[in-house]
Image (cartoon, rainbow, N blue to C red; front, side, top):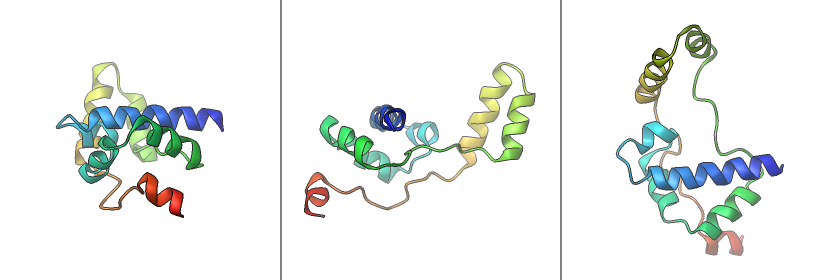
Length: 107
């Protein structure tokens, strides 16, 4: 469980930084709405979410076919292929909102 907490924390911090970039959605796979909400989170809120959510906040965005194709490519072709897949994919995180610290303590 500690690994998931650590990975979640790192991803949320990376997403908060990525929210400042125009390519944040492609880099993270999250919607602009989700990135904007993460950008507003404090480190304490990020730590609490990473610790309390109980599941991984990241997932593989490639299908099995895309993973097989990626593995067959060499060097920079892999990065170009991954970016093209990410750029054409629909970001996760839609319009759902993240709970505020007040909402999580009231629940």
